[in-house]
Image 1 (cartoon, one colour):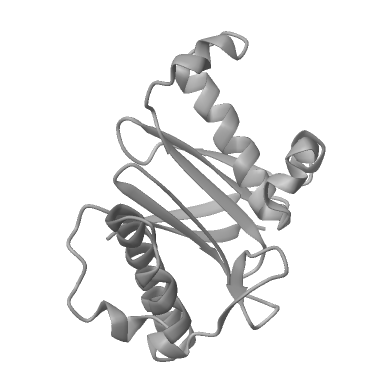
Image 2 (tube, rainbow, N blue to C red; image 1 turned 135 degrees about the vertical axis):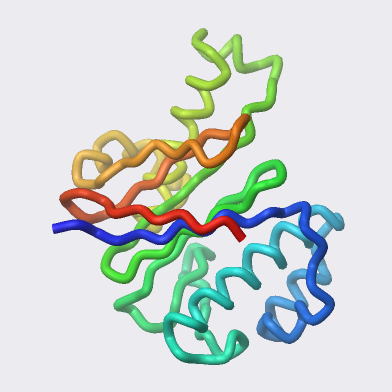
Length: 190
């Protein structure tokens, strides 16, 4: 059985629409206004507005009525326990949102940018470092434990379907889905 996953790629360079406040909940507007930089605000608003619009269309609701709550560890999720499930990541100019109706999942993307310390972390290329990092992060997000469960990432990976993502040149990422079998992945660039 295939597990369907929609992957939304958000251009974080795009100008925010003038009515972005009308798409977000009051709590999200408050959070956006308190962001430490214009860049962080742009990332948060662009991804959260795209998520709300997508889920609103799926659920037949207005975007502001999509019941997004935070779990005890601070991970956003729908109030409805049976999904759809989603995960959000952003790096550089790209945001990714993964959505699945049937299984929890995690997504992570990283821009391939240099860090002097990478060569000191056991060798390997920059790409290998970020592929390993995004794999671990996607697994940790899929479990709902975040980096608190990162030390168990390899152990938990055996029960997941992992998909290496190449969404744009200069980026790498991973998708982890907590369902057996193949993943039917569809990409939508917004």
